[in-house]
Length: 166
Image (cartoon, rainbow, N blue to C red; front, top):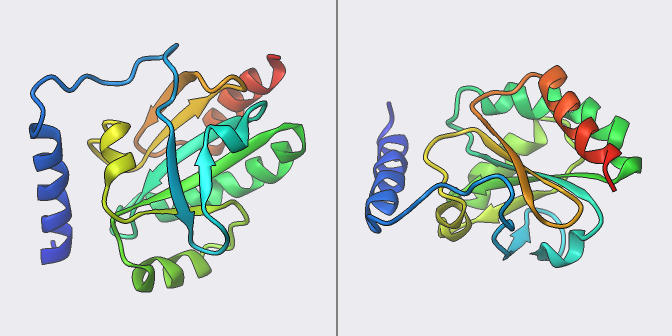
């Protein structure tokens, strides 16, 4: 394990230990709001800019052994359902642009990549491991969380259920 990976794991553990009252976000609660810059494009404000859409909020890093394959595998599902209101926001966890850009360039994904440079959003969402995906309904309410690598079939089924709801 490289020193950078070890330090990131230690930092995530430290962030989790900073507040002994930290609880997980529960299904049925509003998704925490945030503002982040995009890798390529203007900053975004969530949930304001995404009301009326189903959002898959994915937390990832290049050192995560499952993130690369999963990010590519979800692209066809995204393309299939984006016209129905699906948005995937891929939140990179505390890595420099110089690391993120070449990694993303090799993926061939079309969904937005966001930069959580200080780990604030990662902490707000109580992320303890990568990858993790929060599924948020059209009203900004958390409806599911996928911990670890998701298959395209599981992801497609979960978003199809949310997309069918108004």
